[in-house]
Image (cartoon, rainbow, N blue to C red; front, side):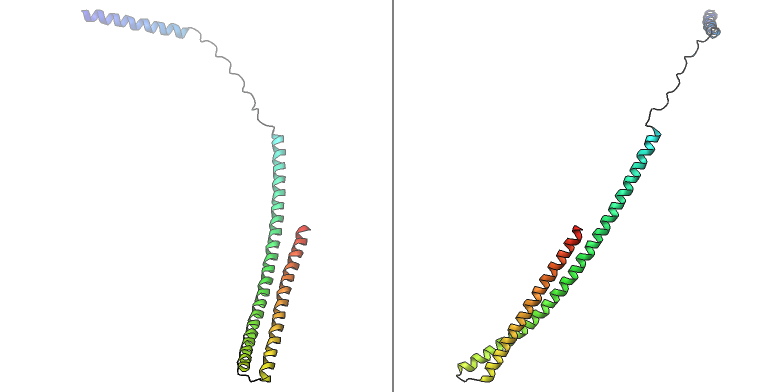
Length: 171
């Protein structure tokens, strides 16, 4: 019988719990707290943002125009430098040709002088060798003068190009 007593106690405790829960459900529930109205976002003004965006777009457009202008000027300068380089190469080739001619003339002069020395060492005066030596020397001097003139013309041409480019960059 102790089982019945124990079951009876357990059943009474369960009924007490059920009665407490029913009483709690019978009581009116408290009113829910009112939910506050959400505040509108406090971000920047859309009209101001549009104005700032328009200003930035205008600035970007101006910068793109300046970049385009700078690129065009740079391309013009590169073309001018390439033209100057081409001119310098031409002048250098001319000077190399003059140098080659001068070398040939100098070699001829050396040979004439050597022949003249040998004839003079043998105490035989040959008018033809003296004339040949003098003609070779005159030709060497003329070739030297032409070479110097070509070199001066090249330098003057480079200075003229540099001055012209300086005037263009100042404008």
